[in-house]
Image (cartoon, rainbow, N blue to C red; front, top):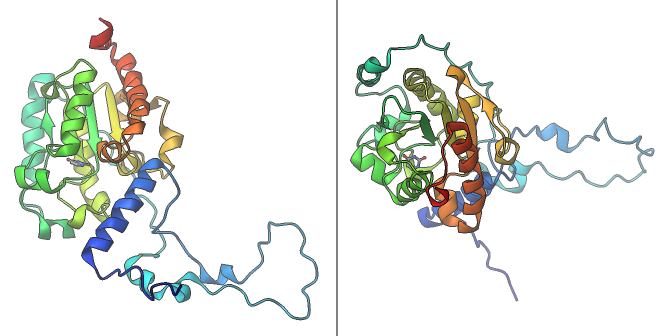
Length: 291
Ligand code: URA
């Protein structure tokens, strides 16, 4: 049987969306990086100096594999293989604000952001999604960036993922109004793609300032993008989950799966619940079911 000559058409938006969704799924699972890898094509043709001593090369050497950009020229149009820039340092922690001034302090940050055009995400935005919830919350959730529903409403986590997040908050014995919710980027990335590093680095200082005002006891990072840009460290989700990480303002950082990932793979919900129970322990909460 002859295989189809071009089974993947990357010019087809539906195919691209499906591929992006699949990449995000694997990424949220913590499996490697499928894009934005540094690729030095010279390395492909050289032996690894760290490996065992190599036998003398035979007279007829096998042809080294072609660099990936030659093998997959079409993919190369889609995948940015530029070397990753080092993460800028997070801004210095701000002085605490008295609890009764938290609301006004957050309002000031929102005003400073204004009708933002600091990065390319501004172009596709309907509403900027600043953050939502109790300015004195003990628990804060940080997601990746607004989706279509959030872009339309101006509020974080109001779509299907938001419904699930609300249920997760409810299972912890809390109401959504009692927590604070924000994202790494405040404007919707096109096609819900992962924010580009320059977009995330441009926007995240405002998130850090929100954290410094709210001063939650516990921050739950929802998914890989959130923990990467909160910590400035790129490690798989599996390396973060299951442990409490000291964070700025004396908060405890706990990492779990993004609700969108849990919608795609509901079998992982039990693991997310285990993560939330760590957060509950840190907050001194008992599950409503066990009261
Ligand atoms: N996904 C996010 O990461 N944040 C939102 O606000 C909505 C969906």
